[in-house]
Length: 438
Image (tube, rainbow, N blue to C red):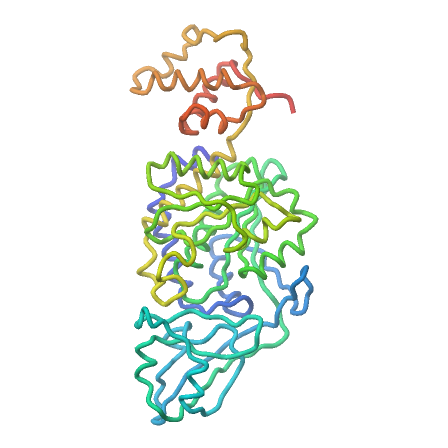
């Protein structure tokens, strides 16, 4: 089976429910850029695909960065003077500023407030905050909880550790017919955040799982990494191999109900940019295409000047553009199975283009060949789109000069890639086009 067969066979709605189940299983885990929460996440992903897990020691130099010390947490709370836990890590792992150093002491409210973070504009939500590269500690809580605090002494405890260990990441490699690679990357380092984190993990996992069922032209490399430091580390360790990457996608925020958004690679005209744009244009849905800018997710590392890889970012509503972003409201209710299904379908359609975007040579370039005597009209008889199919074949014949890809032809003709690809396959079967010499 090839990717065309898979695209016709797979039911995105069924896949989306499997994706949502994985999101639900991963949601309670307290993840960070290092530590056991990240490893536990990879363990759950490994139930679906055979991940290779890499451990990079703390202190390892990766370009201008250093792999940080490993952070783990067991418990955290704030108790009032009656000994009641008024802020409890066990109720929400967002309550602790990620990477907080250990602390256990009594403190007055005035001093405690310096370490508390809320969202006054959304008084029932808990924000997500981090302190990866500056040693500090803090708690996040709803603004309503803050308003309820009385002017008294509180017991503050963060039972965490920050010590030499490892940065962990997972990798899954699918060997294709050629060594040229498609890179699929997602960050897997946030705690209980459903859309910004878990949706991208689930989409990457199930794209990989379904691609294992088919014959592939390209090789595929899926990486599950901590944000920023993970891509920097991966690039540092694999610098001699990145020339194999011909196309790439960073997947994130793919489960909300917003329209699909694609952020182009730094190149702006890479084949992956054209392929995703084509899929969105022919989706009959609202969408947005944005140019590259050096902020956001890990595409900015893959697209840094010395690498300039053809890697774009596929998402729905971009980061910071929905109020639930980096808050407790980015929960299991915010992620929509129908949006997961749509994102899966569009990514699979993009990979379908990459796998089939070939060049051909017209074997009868002097005027049009007679299609009727070859039975091509009868081969498509009974279809309501007969004239369109005929036009698609004429487009393929006219532009099959060894320079134009099928995607070039589809865009020039204003037709869907599937339509042009089908026409090319019919012409190939009748020896009217051939593959150009290698």
